[in-house]
Length: 404
Ligand code: LLP
Image 1 (tube, protein in one colour):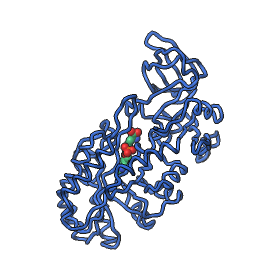
Image 2: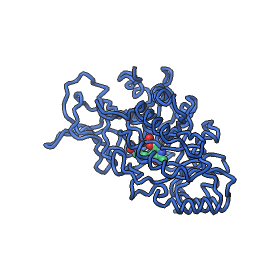
Image 3: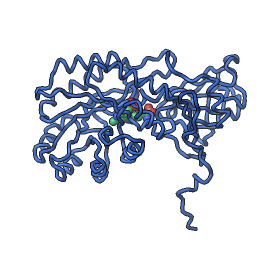
Image 4: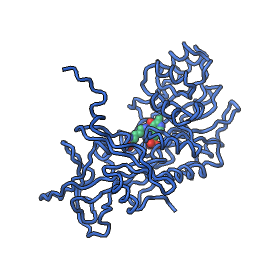
């Protein structure tokens, strides 16, 4: 049985902690992690949670307790992971366009590092030579992912060193005797078709023989989760079978068998999260009926930024007659969560919940319009825990320096 929170539990959370409110369900994260464990049990695979999706420290601790490793996209995520109790060998820093000083800092912290530019690779070689093993993020020139904004592996993407520059990479590796322990690709987010991963592996197979000291191949994240009713998710069992088949077919010519790493973000935390809002105003117009909630793209930017779809339910009137509403926020800018969506009759004061709000929800929130960021709640073992208090007015002034 798939884990989810009931409308009643969500309503109780809203009543107890107020809205807007992010609610996360620990057991759903566990369920998703176990799906990966089961699917990959026959292969030498390691999971690194891409924590950019949701970094609340309690979520990191929960993920750690499951046995997962962690993938970071900034030095601060690395520090949060250490704070959450991950040991350095369980932390991966997949960098992108960062100053070399940050790579040095990551090295001092003893974590795994993927370097994504020739210039940083050269600086790394000059300074550390063979003494610290490092990975290379490659751009495989594969177009994949739910939409262009979240596609990262194509031939116009800023991410990784283009695979066609392999000779330049090899020249640096040779010149500085670099210890290259992994090759990394991440082609995008919301990849439903497992063949995309196989294509990526094929690209890597051509160059694997050129790196004598490889220990693992990192295939990134990007597994798709369902957003709409009836939506498909990446078939993880099929992916596991295909990956195993591909590696069995092409054993590493250097003799060492290669471990495979994945970095899922959404797959682990998208469905565990809910954003509960409250309807401030109903506004009838010739075009539509607006349900204006006490939130906006300052709290959940995905619909406006990626045209993404989030299921919405009226948890205050679940048996009400279905009507169409356009759900909008209260930001002083067009701020549409959903247009002409069927919902059970909405009244002012009703709670509307947005699903799939765990990944890149709170994490991409802001204080635009000087609104407070929502509080966060964790449901674990049937208990509700406040894991981040709502902003207060002091938070808005916290780092400002009044000079006039
Ligand atoms: N690894 C790397 C190197 C990444 O850049 C990402 C995501 C992941 C792993 C995890 O991808 P996931 O499994 O979560 O799809 N904010 C966008 C998604 C951007 C993803 C950026 N990189 C959204 O809300 O759709």
